[in-house]
Length: 259
Image (cartoon, helix red, strand yellow):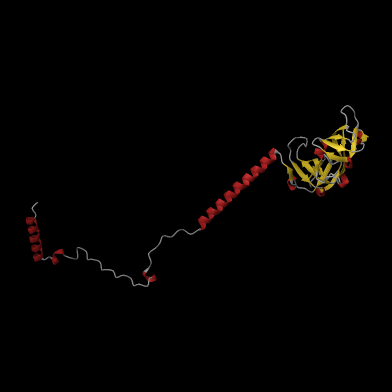
């Protein structure tokens, strides 16, 4: 192959194989791999739905792609399904955590078309045949042990792996979690602000300055007037002043024409 881009195995198997003679060799049906070194050696096609024979192609026989076809050069190796069932593979193997509990299944893989090196596996929590299921990336270095149909890891859960593709349900869970985190942050900020308000001292009303804090001497206060039981109002009565006031009032009424 001329390209070194990574390729998804399921995409390769969806293409119909066409040789350099122009013959149709059918769609891909399974991978041919070497699990101990995590390498894809080739793939298998089914030339006819009426015959039991299968055709095995080496990865280096592939020479090009179109949207729905993969072009190969040379001839395939013809075999039968019984022989293919004995080929080792990690696909559809159960993925176990560090305690031996099932986490999911190996559903797919991503490989380098030039060398066949497997970059990472894709793990599904539920049945990998269901459309739209989530996929997590499992690199070969995370695998502790591998047996036929079983892959053991040191993982505590699928959350330890990066998410490659999320389902609608997984997207909803992630969005709901983000909303909860945002609401929790808003509540924490509001609580911190309220605590800050409660910790501040109460506002004091402005008080009048004390004469002790002022450089000017305090104003002299007038002595309080004596009460009515101590002073007789007739002591200051002036008869002459009273007569003069009455005479002025009488003259003013005589001079007013409207009275």
